[in-house]
Amino acid sequence: MKNIEIFGQEILVKDSLCGPSPEARWEVEPNLRLYIKVTDSCNAKCAFCANGTCKDFGSIDFQKLEFVIRYLKDNNRLHSIALTGGEPMINPDKVNDMLNLIWSIDENIEVQISTNGLNLREIAGFDNPNNLESIHISRHHYDDKTNIEIFKTDTIATTDDIMFLQDALSNKKIININTIVMKDYIEDLEGIKRMLDYVGETGVYKNGFVSLMKCNDYAKDHFINFNDIFNNLDNNFLLAKRFFAGEYCECIDGVYTSKNAKLVEFYARMVKDCSCPYTTQLVYTSDNKVTAGFGKKVLLKDFPKK
Image (cartoon, rainbow, N blue to C red; front, side, top):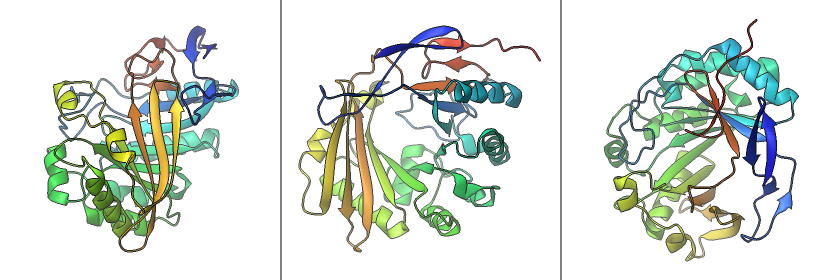
């Protein structure tokens, strides 16, 4: 861990790569992912959500956002950018404009979008959708009806929507499906395999599995320790490597052969301690503040006047 200065304030950051054991570490010069909360509003009402209020707290000022991105880039602290929420695709035009702003600063900045699939097909009409590093679509079950049950709304991505966008993109490795591992839904190895088979059928390249963060009673009651699943992989899993961020986080990466003989990359992640003292991310909030992580210390709220 290392203290660095951001916007005149000192924060503790991770300065090492994840390693094959909790003790292993390779020091690197720290840089951070910037999460931009396009909005705090969301069309879904997931029981496990850590952003349960789902209210919009303001409107992003593009001039202020540009100042933050340029500052981080000029100080060699920007690793990549993720557009998130709430649900960022509530306003597709705003997301497209934001992408154009980011790439006008530097066309090589890696940008990802995290979405539950609202207005998913609109991404195909963006000015430069194939420039995206990734599109993370939250999809917590292989069955459309069950997925709607989890999100408590039908304004999310259907299988047809996912396949439409996958077909429309020239870069076939952009889309990732993200799946929460939880009781009553995807909760064991057979469920994991059925989900990976489903992803293989859509033509999507990668599926991620994430254990619940115990942020509320529902998440605590439905928590599944990913080691109970991923310590017992069978011969359909060709490769699996494990990584640790000290004692705070554990993940595994690998490749799965689906029942239609498609190779699907997968990863699984479990945060083991939410009281991690360091940060790997900054957040630009929907009301134009910069914080050292989600809901954490405010680093910038008063911007230089032009």
